[in-house]
Length: 419
Image 1 (cartoon, rainbow, N blue to C red):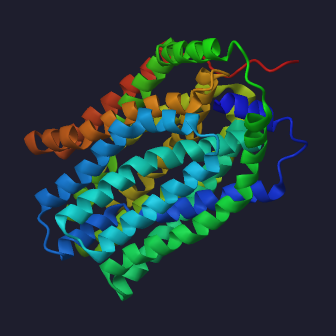
Image 2: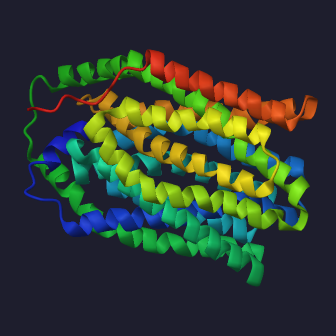
């Protein structure tokens, strides 16, 4: 049963319980907490365990490659799952296992297993949360719900970074991963009120009589997969997101390297500010952007976010003052809010009632993964061969190409509302 069907059936229920809405808020917050533990803290921890930079890079690349390869099959798997809350719970438990593997034995075998497990589970958890969000909000209010998700996720990122930074400083780097594992427990608790969303689907599946034409319907569903994946709008949007990520992924790491050279001992605080400032902006803007996307269309909000990227790249190339570099990161907050809200929203628009929302989202995620994988390598090569400003200009040019492609080729996807 597809997500569009699920949303339609959910709309027959008189009202979604308030507890389900709050559970989704807390789920986004705690999942962001957990994901923070799998960020830069891995590199710090493995360095203290005697790992070389090359070995750390290989381990992180293994996780990235697993996530990229898993996007489409994981999306299809979540589409096929009748119980989205169960899919989310299994993904969170996989995060628990990954964190424990890191903490208990940071040997190559355990670390590689943890990275693979985390990479695949990330690709099932995101679509499961998006599916439950659509069931809670319905198609008409999906954009606003995604904005609210992004707000709570940004708060979770900030709190998670603070908690884990303090834990690593006052306890140990290993303790960060025990804390990450512990934070999966409240995330599982947040899922409990969301389990009620599965009830109408299970009841309908149990009592629906078998129809003669059902097998033919299944064959039509298989053909619909091909139609969705070959949809011109999906292909153009995937290309836009790939170019966006190609330009964006390397920008902060490159700026962080420049900050470290210029600011010396104060670089850590400035880099932390570069991370926190965009999160504050995402928390403030995301619900408003979701509402704007529902009222004025997707293209306007997408263009607002995409144009921030070339502007940010050019300013990074021209500015050397560390404080100004931090302030420029405010543009990243606008771009991140737009991108985070609109990617699942546009995927939902394109999938429509085909039942392949998460498959569409996985396809876009695969394109994003390609951009992220190439970005840091390409920008690093340009910076080493020429200079940091040249690398920023190259990233800005790529961001401008993404913006132009979006403006010239991407049609509006917002469904027509009756009346």
